[in-house]
Amino acid sequence: MSSSTPQASSPSSAGTRYDRVWRNARLATLDPRLPGLGLVEGGAIAVRDGRIAYAGSEEGLALAAGEAGEVIDCEGRWITPGLIDCHTHLVHAGNRANEFEMRLAGATYEEMARAGGGIISSVRALRAASEERLVEESLPRLDALIAEGVTTVEIKSGYGLDLDNEAKALRAARTLGERRDVTVRTSFLGAHALPPEYKTDRAGYLARLIDEMLPAIATEGLADAVDGFCEGIAFSPEEIAQLFTAARAFGLPVKLHADQLSNLHGAALAASLGALSADHLEHTDAEGVAAMKASGTVAVILPGAYYFIRETQKPPIALFREAGVPMAVATDCNPGTSPLTSLLLTMNMAATLFGLTVEECLAGVTREAARALGIGHEVGTLETGKWADFALWNIERPAELVYRMGFNPLHARIRNGQ
Ligand code: DI6
Ligand code: FE
Image (cartoon, rainbow, N blue to C red; front, side, top):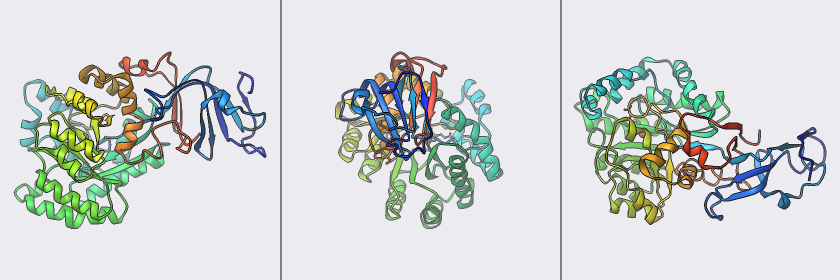
């Protein structure tokens, strides 16, 4: 084993087995074969070609001199998988602070949505913005997530609601992934709201979604998944079922905003269509939970929206826990119901508001978030073969990541081993 002082030599030196090794670390691997957080004291991670070649005890690595291009002494710091925000609408234009003020004066979210505010006001703003402007407005939000150790982020469309503007938003999301060192996964959320021009023609918009927008977006490879908002103020279970059946025919996985404001049995619907995840779930009942368990659908818990619109109905966490439904935790970053760009604070909310444990919170922003995006085989844990995405923290114990509010103890963020 090398000495405890950092040493570095050329990563290209001949005969090296690893490009880089992080040693003298405490690992929260989130390896599902280990109990709890999958802790390894006195741990090391070795990386080759951007992927984890070894994660475990230093003794197990038994590194010989010259075997690693670079050895980094972590000085006992904690390492977790890179954080994953698996549900965001972070590509949007403008903000809705005005509506926030109206709600403080007594209006409800649903009242404003029905009065033409809400999502539709963000649709007007996004349609008026150029693609480059959208990228520029969204970058600070992405940077805020990255600054806390996020290495993968999901970004939805849903404020365009016609082909050109939905495609513009999805391209902007892809561009964000090129401008920053982060993995972006996109979801097509054309079924977010009825656009103003179809206000009196639901069937017309649904036909357009299925026959025009979805095929074009799928063919251009702009979306990694298809999402929908199943709600009284949005789309019915029957409409969502039609759209998702079409999405599956294009080979696209589906995920659903389900049971957020009322119980339309969206969770059960999502499960019946093999959804990767059902999200929000405040009003989901025991049948919905059982259906999700049977289909392996991840429950994405979004405490930011619950908090911000002062919901009182909590998602059935105890039922998910009993049934063994995996729970992810995400910001839902959006201008209307969750203007939140801190995944650390989101974990605190999930614990404080919904009673998630520290282990559930941390698994929820790593392993289970990866699963909710269908990329659990690539990221989300510190396991051999996965991308070397991880975060080093200045903390004494993992609970600190959940406990603090508005403090960022990130020491370093590694993506693809860099
Ligand atoms: N549920 C939400 O909380 C957001 N979208 C959704 O389907 C709200 C989006 C907005 O108000 O702009
Ligand atoms: Fe959302």
